[in-house]
Image (cartoon, rainbow over all chains, first blue to last red; front, top):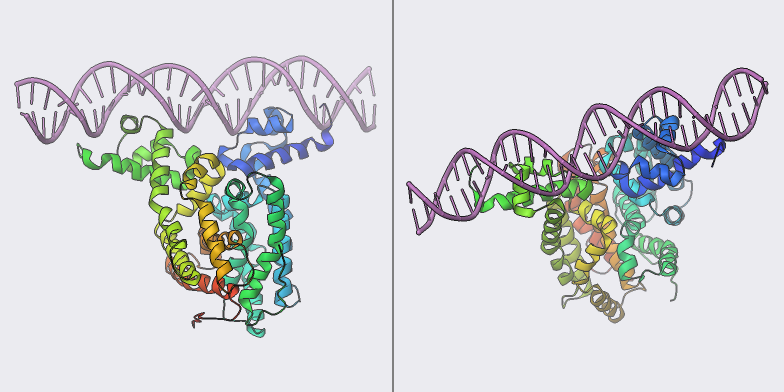
Length: 210
Length: 210
DNA sequence: ATACGGTTTAACTAATTGGTTAAATATAAT
DNA sequence: ATTATATTTAACCAATTAGTTAAACCGTAT
């Protein structure tokens, strides 16, 4: 435990990530973070000064790691259907790989709206909306606004992870394997659900068997 | 303020509802609840003994008020399409009328899973799944499981309310009127989105103009 | 008038927590 | 060997908070 200073700061950051993502800024305690990192409170102070600065570091790390790629997918020069399938797949993957990411994002949006939006604005959301609207106009798609479409896509991807404890209880009977399979399959079913709704004929929709 | 004992208990419960829904059990303080109710801490103790019992009262009040009706809609003896439209409309209505309901439900599912599920089980969710599955089997609908369908419906209804602060910022430019109109319209657009995805031909789907 | 339930006041305790510090100790680089 | 850096220990303060209590006060119904 002693003097492995190369990764101690990183270990603290990881511990903070874990605790902040599960409990949120206010409920999380510096003591728990220190315990999980295997250091003491004084060292948190040594590296990050205080709780708020530590939380900010966690926040920026998460935002910069997970969000930009997703916007990139939706503005790529490809048919809309391909973009939608890629986005859904990538988003469900990233949320699967980080159990508490959905919870964290929602918590930050609600409790720290200003700061979250400042970061989010760097991704130029209006430009995204404009580009998607343009695609909807060009392609032969039933009437829907880009905002509604994006909101629907986000809803279908993120919400199931938010209520995962409930699904675990009712549907998966607390078997992690069932949960994993469910979310794996959803990459397909959610894409199909969206595409099927957008195009007049069931064009290209892949149906799959149980 | 004095001796209106008829509704003081109710006032405290309303104040507690408001604070607990926004901040969650742990971040909420009894002092703030007392302030909003226009009474002092000692009176909370007089009526509800302690914070936990007060929170429980709020929880049960909310669950019993808002949830049962929604399950009732989905198991009514009607064509599935009508049930879906009624469910979406009713759910968006109830979430619109109670700004912090979505946030509260999500918070409880995540932080108090056991207790939430105990209450939820009273609504016989497996029966709901069975009935919806049966409807999907009987009617001429593309392949989708009842679980996926219900998860999708819930996602499309609830998630936009959870990220409303974000939408307010990017889309509505903090104009409450725009937000209201958006969610009003979504009763239609979400229903259409789902129905359109379920049925092979665009049967009965109402298209609407800007 | 009195007795009772509702309400306030004011004070207190115990526990938790974030933040801070000083000193000691360990390690690696020079 | 010396120095700079990393880390621990241990103690402390100030603030917040849930919970509790005793006494007084108010209003109303009997």
